Length: 151
Image (tube, rainbow, N blue to C red; front, side, top):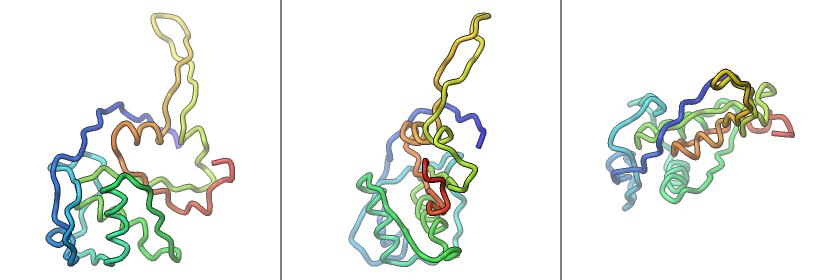
């Protein structure tokens, strides 16, 4: 995974939405959301049908800044479920496939040699984890069981 991640500021959610109105789930809950999407908000699938229990668990994660693990058989829509919740919250969300090609450096960052003012200097280039923390972006670690042990 070689990509340059832009530095962005991390605005906080600026609205609250009704779970019953947005997700069609009978619950007297409001969760934080963003009024406007950015480039990292997943595309909305209007025909997506939400599982109540899974949706409430994911929403609790967004509402209380907690990690949520969704498990199930391969290809059953676990990652899509998270992305569709994020889409309705206008919450930035990036899927990271933890296959054998991703390394700890991709996630955390690395030292890089750059030329600045005609001189070579070493600077730290952040990986996707620090970027996600700074930009308030939800990360979906897909197929975590296929990841390398050092990651």
